[in-house]
Length: 158
Image (cartoon, rainbow, N blue to C red):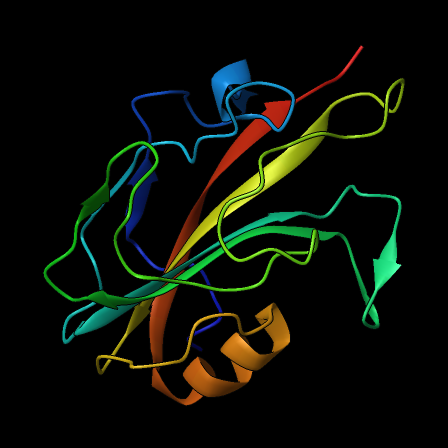
C-alpha cells in the first residue's frame, strides 16, 4: 500500500527526528522552511511532493483535523534535498490561506505539537498548479504514490 511507510529516510540538518524545531523555522521566528534531505526512495520514483502537517492543532478544518503548514510539489525525481527557505517546486495553499511555508506556532500554553514533514515519492512527474489544497494534492497524486516517509519535529510556545 503506497500510503504505508516506505524505507525512504527523511532527515534535516536543522533538527533530528522527534527533536525541537529551531525557532528560525517557526512563524514567531524567521518563518523559513527547514532544510530536508531524503534517501532510499522507492524504485521507479520520478517525482516528489512534501507536506508539513500538525495533527495536534486544536482546529478541525475542511473536515479534517490538524493544520497544514506546507505543501510543495512538482519536485523532479532527481531532487534528494531542499535547502533552507527552498525556492524549488510549486507551492500549495497552507491553512493560513497562503501559498508556501508557514512555520509552527501552536497556541500559547498548548504544549508541544508534533510537526510531520512528509516526503511522498511518485511514479511520474507532476505539473500541478500553484495554490491547491492538501485534499486536492492528495487526490491528484494518490494514483501515482509509490511510498512515503516522514521526519517529525517538535515545537512549543510558552
